[in-house]
Image (cartoon, rainbow, N blue to C red; front, side):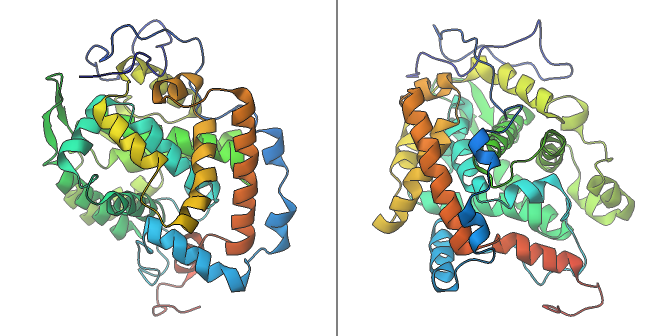
Length: 385
């Protein structure tokens, strides 16, 4: 397997995380060690990100003339609403309006976080082998992006039954995704080790983008809660969790929403529950990472996706903003510039773009719809105020 020479991070600490699964040797030989800490989220958000733009406050509900057009363009890229806004009235889903997940995913910075997550995830050769051999990535790349976005949004904002249903659907697909990578190593999409990698990469990326670009970056306590919530959702993809029994057990569902239900991938340490644990998990995966031929194909798509020219114009600052928040070693292995000046310029461009997006679109339509559903009385009909 052709593999780049640099791994993302060196492992820290004196041994594996308690309870963490063992892993095979690193796929890339000769990867230089790095002293750079894995970046999940800074201790203190960027100074510029603390200052909410005047544009963010100028039109809190968006600009009606432009709002529908921009939302339509986003829908063409990420897909339409993936959950039923008229679903079970009063059902706040797995997390609810007061959760860290709704807070972080409801900001436009989450768009950058999604792109960053894809960039980071493609650095794991086994994960990319599954994508290359079992998905419609080459023939329907946008469709795959929409399905992934739909899963993340429904898990976070859908009703409890919708969140469990979309998890069940993903698990059905995962059961068929197994094989051997070019170097002969076996992979399976439902392997808890790979499931954990995809989750920690997504969680870390959302937090890094929130800290860099959110209108009001999350504080330390919120970041910790976000890690715990996202791990709870990801742990449901574990084949050891009986979703049918869980769906039928009202007490277990209450415990799940409260974060009190024992889930194997959390209790065995595979998934983190705080930012320090997240950083440790990223460091633990470091020696396994590298970009092979499948990863480079995915990278080419992310760098130049099949988008209409006007949509691509808006995508470029999202992409450069995502790249700017990646650790230097990851940017190196991806073959993108590591200049501090270029990264600083990209961050400014991305903040400006997101401020304009917030001003034009207003609050997240998905958050607005989910909040209205959660606040309706269970006796109200669909769409009742």
